[in-house]
Image (tube, rainbow, N blue to C red; front, side, top):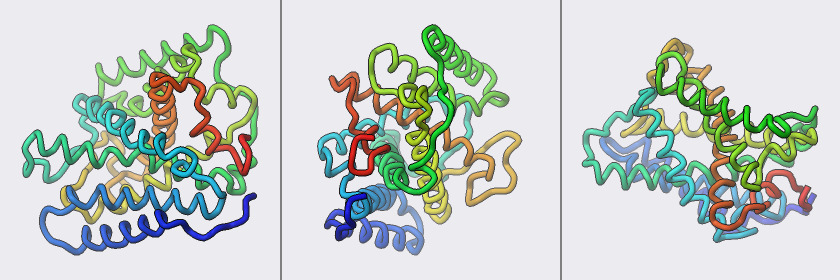
Amino acid sequence: MPARRSLPIHGWIGLVLVGVSWALNWSLEGLRTHLGFFPLWLGYCLAVDGLNVRLRGTSLATRNVRAYGALFLISVPAWWLFEAINLRTANWSYVGREHFSDAEYALLASLSFSTVVPAVLGTAELVAGRGGVRRLRGRGAFPRGRGTAAFFVTGVSMLALTLAWPAVFYPFVWLSLFFLIEPLNHRLGFRTLIERTRRGDWREVGALFVGVLVCGFFWELWNYGSYPKWVYHVPGLGFAKLFEMPALGYLGYLPFSLELFALTHLAFGLAGHPRSDYVVAGLTRDGDDG
């Protein structure tokens, strides 16, 4: 493990942004979160990245600052994709949306959505070298040969069922895109989770799962005292809430992290970096490329 270092300046900036934005968001009256959400989560991203530098000597931003900026860009259409599916499933809505024109909403929402991917991947890297995640091994998994075609067909079927009968099959939203995109990445020669899990290396999956649950906790915590805010409409699961989210709803975050991973590597591959280990190395390495 690299020797611990001082927290870099961007980590301190992130902590200040989190502290100030959180305090203002929960103390001011009226409309506020449309202006406070982005600096709050930008601060989270910078703080987590700074902690990675301090604890591991490497981070997403310090390895490649341009690629780190690209994560914010990738995040915008990635989350709008889920918003598009939600037009059919209607599993969440935004209280206070009526105060904004369509153009204002699109701009402010896109700015907020830009922090999703860097937050999840940065947090996954932060936990990747910790105890159980670092040692996570198991049996090989994911399909070989023609199995990837079955993987893809499963994704298509899940998405079709979701759109046809959203009240019943809405949980497939958080599975279908991974089943669609992961075999596509594999076919195109882009980075995939298939490669390592086939060898029994589950560290990436474990890090993504833990990382997204940490982010999910803070998303729901900070949303609870916000305005505008989101609320959920989840058939059959509207009980035992932790903040606005039903407790069982947090399980949806797990496959969501895999979808973000797949979408990120699809974007990297299409941009001309098909075998980029920028994220892969960060999730599995402790001073080496794993």
